[in-house]
Amino acid sequence: MTATAVRPTGRRELLDLLGRTPVVRITAELPGAHPGFWAKLEGLAAGGMKARAAVSMLLGARERGELAPGAPVVESTSGTLGVGLAFAGQALGHPVVLVGDAELEPSMRQLLRAHGVRLELAERPAAQGGWQAARLARLRELLAELPGAYWPDQYNNPDNTAGYASLAAELGAQLDHLDILVCSVGTGGHSAGVIGPLRRHWPALRLIGVDATGSTIFGQPARTRLMRGLGSSIHPRNVAYDAFDEVHWVGPAEAGDTCRRLARSSFVSGGWSTGAAARVAAWAARVNPGAVVATVFPDGPHRYLGTVYDDDFAAAHGLDLSGAATRPVEIPHPYAAEAVGWARCTRVTDPLKGIR
Image 1: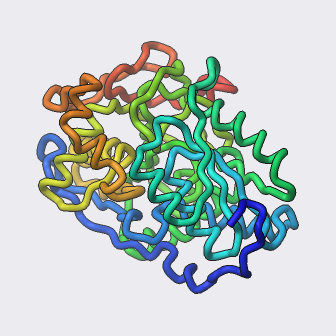
Image 2: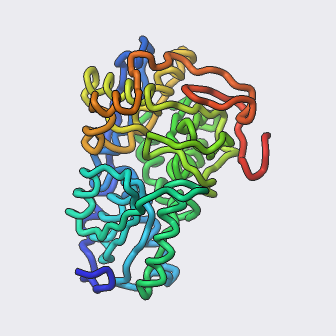
Image 3: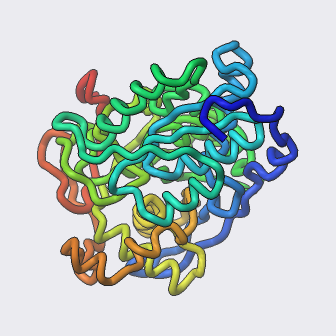
């Protein structure tokens, strides 16, 4: 099937598989003892966490007349949203064209193609904006080549955020109380989408953002990033900066070590975003005795068997998991110092507006 071919009306019964994921109590040492936190296991849903956003973005575009029945959907992805769009495309009857890059794992390439996606790969990062900019450049070429194609623009699309209302509703029903929510940040969609509804439920709820070292989202300088799934080299407008009480930058050694500890001791685990968020959630539970802490595990471990869980990969990239930081370094504001490992800041910034 070509990207411009018209699919049937879709398979809406697939939407019954969206979300409805369990929460589990995590008490594994990460890396030290802590009272425990709740983890929402989004990796157990069809299409993963970002299927919620993908379905929301396509339905919103159809309602506004921006996406015609059977028209192709074109998007840039580092992998996770791609799976969600593959799910949404099948459910709603749209062929999906994704732009990845040369660092996209072979297993993810195979998975996306198995789900019927046409996959294009950027071969080299752009001088400004890295892989994301390179992917977006190829995406714009595809939009010109494919008549009627729709670009969801996940980084700046409010429907991305709106798609996580169901996640907030599920957390509100599954937990009796919540004091601290820890969210990894990439497009900014899921943190922005859940915090509003949950604060209406629990007004004093604190939100901790988890970014990657080398990411520009919260005002740090852009650097080459090993981790995929969180962080950005652009400034997504879906990020609800005013909603965050603090931000942590986590490095690949800390995230990788946490993923492996989770897999060994809790069975449930995931990739870079899961490891980074879990590290911070365990810390938050430890330093806030009596607080109820929760986080979201965006996906499972399968995509990362050749990276996070591979000793040869760790050695090739100089990752010393045994030397991972056990607590964050405190910095007074995002421009005070470059976070090269786990760092924490209680002054949150929108880089386009300055420090508040």
